[in-house]
Length: 283
Image (cartoon, rainbow, N blue to C red; front, side):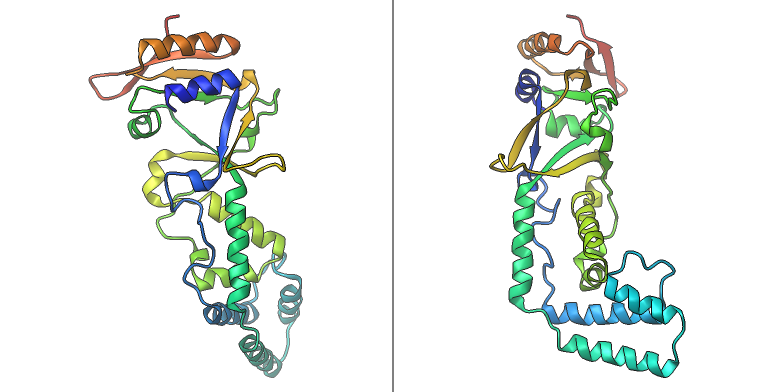
């Protein structure tokens, strides 16, 4: 972060948790659901997926919706081929009459837009030694890195942080087939899976960030697209002072660090081998 942001963080002992609407990557958390998929495509994909489940039942059906689980479990016990054929034909016919309306899909998209605005996400990285991160996020080497410890004693929230995935291929949920798989699941399972994909998956181009995240939603008293949530003083482990930080910023941050008795300060410099060097900061 920049030195000015670090001063605010240390002075208020809080971190900003933001809605994805404020992120610098517009492709991070999807702003819209079911983009480019029309109702007919969704029905056809769902029909194919259900037929596949019936023809090749999975060993574990616990995550399927109750109705579908009963059907698949019944099939697994063995039914005549003629009855199976009739069942598949009935599913195809029923699907053709249950095309979701554009209005219902628009309602789902609206609900998701509201959810994205209400999300509160805190982002970390694994290492303080990455040139691109220092350049983009720490104000071109003039800022700092704050390191936090996972502290059982203070019940640090980052104990439940999770790593971001950077798949080469887009997740299946961006297709009608992927949505068909979601719609076949129990509603709670589907919502968790959708949130996991949306919030813990990013384009492979961002893999260098090695990001970890915490995801929650704004409290009833929160407003806007970000909230400052406090952290315990013992959770701050280290402040890394950037190689181009000004003497004024350095001095002000070291004074603020006195309020964090378990935190240490390290000065960051650049070696001739193009590596970062961390030395104990002189007071």
